[in-house]
Structures are given as structure tokens and as C-alpha cells.
Image (tube, rainbow, N blue to C red; front, side, top):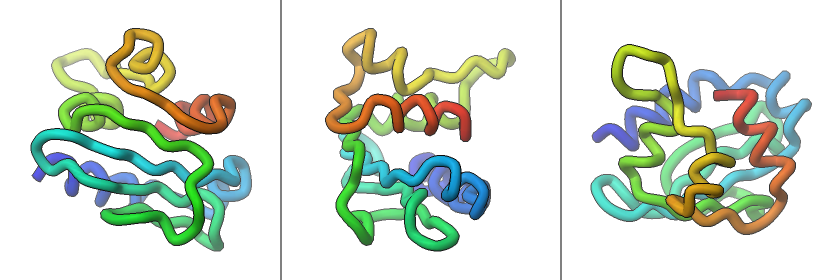
Length: 110
């Protein structure tokens, strides 16, 4: 599904450089289609992303709908306008627990 596909793309985009510059682990609690617990590990070795609990404790936990998650990472429509994690949070579409500054560094990767 779209969520799994998005995480495949993220996994492919994770580089050691991102890991070094971010040093954070993100956990996503997604509701709806393809939901569940997913993670992006930008702390351990070369980093990783996928389904399930992160290998180490998450620094940031974001809860949102899987549709919003896919929008956040892929953008929809003609313009490459993505839903920024911080904006989604400000609009009340998602909840973020943990290190807000790390959330902003995740936006740089998107």
C-alpha cells in the first residue's frame, strides 16, 4: 500500500550523512489504511526505516492518519507542496511527542 511504498522510498533516501546530521529516531503511530507503528531510525549506523517498533527508543513519536503521512512525504497534485510535519502539528492534524527540533530536521530530509 501507499504507506509501505512511502517507507520503501524513505529507506532508499536514508544516507549516513542524514544519520550524522540528524541523530534522531522517529516513530509514527498511523491510523487508517496501512496504519500501525512505523519508524525512521536516523541514529544507528547507516540508518533504517520500516514497519514496527524502532530498534532503539524513539526521540519523537508522531501520531496521524496514514493518509496525512503519505501526503507529508510524497505531496499530492501537480505542485510539490508537501504537508510539513510541523504544519500538520500546528493545524491539529497530528500530535508530536518528544524533541520538536528533531521534527524540523526531518523536514530537511523530505
